[in-house]
Image (cartoon, one colour):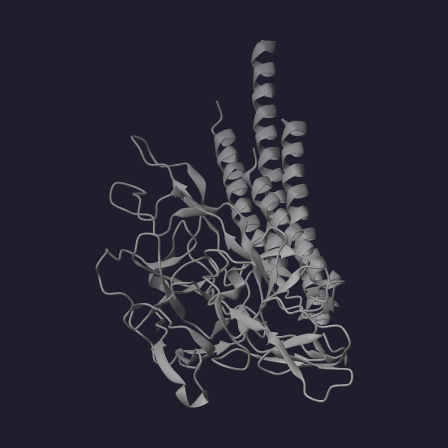
Length: 250
Length: 261
């Protein structure tokens, strides 16, 4: 059997995978703080007890796009967006620190500061707890100051500073829950260092940084590439049929 | 089947819900005391199809793996409790809370609901009720032959009767506040119910202890911004179209496959 058929099949299969990745980006075009995923393909030679003459296609997600998404004005005091690179630190489901750009914050009845996904925001000394307040302000460096309930403007007090970090993008990896983590970090290891140069802006949320045009174009390009793979499978099939015909004519 | 079909279906569902929220906000652009909603989206789980760092040969490793997302999920809708603009109406029973706080409404089943809508009326018994006829808590009865009704900023209701000079105090309207108003449950009719997420109501006196002042003769407008909603509608519509384009692209691929093999 001609192995071209299998090579074309692997190409078609990987086209489907990479189209799924692009359609996931497109489906998250309105997700707050979403970071678009890149896809790439690699030629992977087949090793074994033979000469590696065949190379199959392999789709990969090498990294995510860390460019800034659009800042959308909401006017809500507790919506906080990061300007420029950097991350909010949240407590993941495993209790370990994870990074996100979604800063649509609110306070639960226990005073815990969390984003709209219900992930607790971390400060200098662990998860942030805010006492009952009347007004809340987020300074440019992430310092939270509140006017405590029932007190006048003279009682405005700094409570805590949001932990803002900026680890090297090359070390970050998106987990299965969509949060970013430092690759290879073990539980208990110190997390990313606080970066004093980061700035946040209150009253805004950061939209998704998905470029819908690019993603849609990629989806359509994958569509056509897939058709070419099927054509190749068809050609391999026809070659096989022609060979059978020639051989059986003898 | 083609996974992209399901991924883009989740995108279509999310945009569909976003449009419902936008249209509900727009429909309530003139509703007194209405607070706009916004949908909250989150990315669904990622599936690891190939682990980064897996061996690509006996002594080489893949530098990056393959993790494919499975689409988008609506985590919920969130009420945005920014204050709407004040509109003077000069009606003595129209009230607006200028700042934090909710009026309490006694529901027919005896429970309390909370509202920012200060359009009040008097029923046949002289009790202050909201537009649906539910009684304002604490109950305040207005005597017959009332000439002037004044409500102070801290909620004290006074009536001056015909032929009398000194006003008579009828009661005081309390306000309540919640640590997380966004956690309140909307029940329609401009009313909210307490939930575990909102925390327990904290009763207090208007214009004191951080509560807003009660402004008589004014109403709070809806906080919906028409321009913002229309811009959202444009993005929702285009995102919907692009997701449906992916569905048709995936469909064409499957069609091509069945027709050419």
